[in-house]
Image (cartoon, rainbow, N blue to C red; front, side):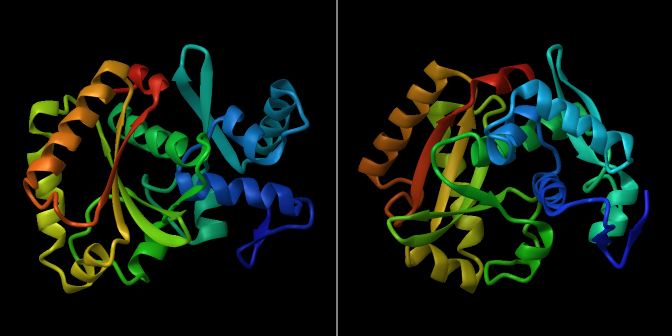
Length: 238
């Protein structure tokens, strides 16, 4: 693979650059998501053939997502050459623990009706809401009623719906220690999305959030939008 000056060589067109940019942003992708975003007029088999070509030329690799589906990732050479990034957080296959969280963000942002976009690490570090202890990359952007929102996802790994107010309160109170987050929260630009693969659990979580709102428990009186999102395929990964 020949890549110069952080730009794809002449053998790679803009469409393929966009596909690689997408995989870089979300860390992984699937044939189904890539079809939805870039190849609406092609069959899934044609999309897989296209991805096979990208793999053959060394730009991407793939690994098993489920018994019936693969996920695609950047090779280390691509991440370093095109994006000046090295390390497991940018290239190669993922461990089961990180695969579930990464897949959840991909599906949440790219497979729903709402238009969302995950922040990259560079975008976070150059943004107003950056904090020294921001932790893992779990943030996304979304426009709601003309207002730009900063969202954070929480994955349901044994999330106790009876204590949802405490869990959410902990997230909010940690952010309120920073002046920049205080401004974002009080001006109504922050939202939290809980992702669960279980329909009954989603119902219980929504009920718990409504109850906590009514009682104004654990900072629930603040203008923060809190959603529960159902992503059933995640059952196989968490």
